[in-house]
Length: 385
Image (tube, rainbow, N blue to C red; front, top):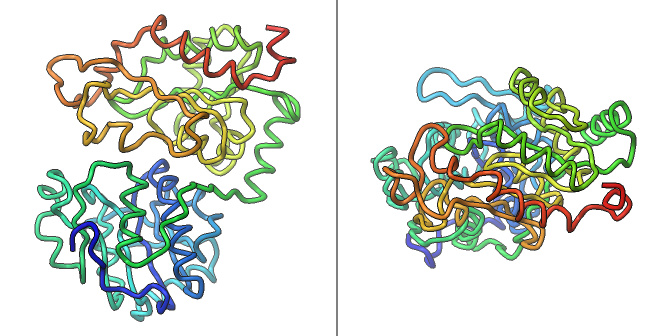
């Protein structure tokens, strides 16, 4: 089926739907409009989402699905599933092993790196539906022959944001694709963790600028540069900094804190859900192309994101903000990019380490980011800066 064609599934008649989304934090956030539309399209269905273990803490509170199951990706061998509680896991296992799902959906447009199709296919669902291997050159290479394992696939080569691809997938199934907003649900324990952090470190209600200094490979700004930028922002705004990360960043966060000469506290000890709630309380977040930026946008927190992809690069590139920029109110989202690639890169940054992004110095980054952040600083804080 090509874009505009109708996939052979009746969502309104489905009793049980399985959604396999084995991607990272930002990818989960960008899936939320699809899930909201799926819920509206199949209000009577029990919807189960299978996500990576690292994403489960953020996904477990999603109101668009009935249960969230975690798994580690494995191309071969047995799979170990985890649930929020024993009842969730037992219910999933009964449906999964018993072929209880009417349809299994794999809403990943580009290459499937984490064996999402394997999990969907093993569910024994009556139908397994996803995107065609011919959607992108990378998928055609890495997932060659996999279309044959689907009941039906959607061929969509249009240039658009990842959210729009998923909504197009929903529309092709006859679903309601009118919900475009990403709404990130948080649990009471997440909000309590954020409140406790604020009480212990800054005081309830204290405005702050969140800094997310961690990213993978080519997406990473050098820590010294990020620290210099953060310090100047703290001075300009008169606000303390909160360093956002996960517990695996504890050592890196310590090193980053040592580079700062302004008031700052580290929140890397919080759970993913607790960190998300804290981001939602921030005056603004400054980061890179990573999960915290997507979380901020979904929660309405103003966010400035530095991309490694050059403005002159291909919009189809895996690092392009045309595909992966945070999704939300455009007036509260800023994207900063290098103007051109750094040789030998051509269509986008293809390095495994910081490369094209290193062209951005403090004099390039600070003025636009400071102008953006200052729009959201409370006047009381600004007057004391």
